[in-house]
Image (cartoon, rainbow, N blue to C red; front, top):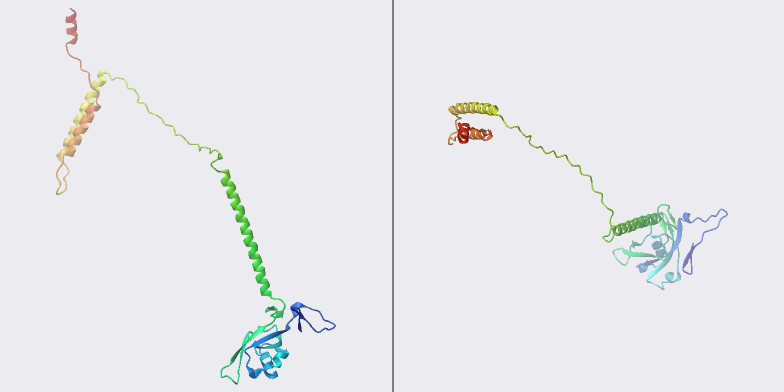
Length: 268
């Protein structure tokens, strides 16, 4: 039984020698409900009992309801079972209308109901949600603290490397230098007359051999393809090679004949 004392509900249970009050084992509870939209033919003891049985186990009603002094709603006391969910509306048939009439149920006090334990007074699902919310808040606070510390460290680093302060010197990287060797020309000794003459003879032989080789090559020149003119590239190459050989040859000093005799005559 539930009593309303100064706006607070008090649950009363029958005492027994082995009575132990356990809030988690309250499977039934009596509450007051208000039925709005109840048809007038049901404002009797039998009709009110039938309407209250749609919500729970009917127990009693107030004087204004039984005497029909207040027709806005019927106030009834029913016993609720925690195994069944709360009923908020239902439909009843009325002889005055062809279609069923919808009746709305309002609870003056709606106790907490646990579907898992099937008892009143607590809600395991609600507790799980609260625990999850607390864990989420803790994780969010932890992330915020970490972000603040990171921002502080970044600001401190920016102050340390500001333009007004000297940054630490940067050490230059060692560069390996390659040894550059300069090759100087080797001085050559002046050639004697005999070597010059022998060189002239060998150069003449080389010229004759090249000239003979060029003449042999010119006897059978390669046939150009159709539609192209014959160019004398081989002759030009041979002439340029001869010119290069002449440039490479050192100049030969030739003594004039009769020079000594002229000097002696001038002295005499």
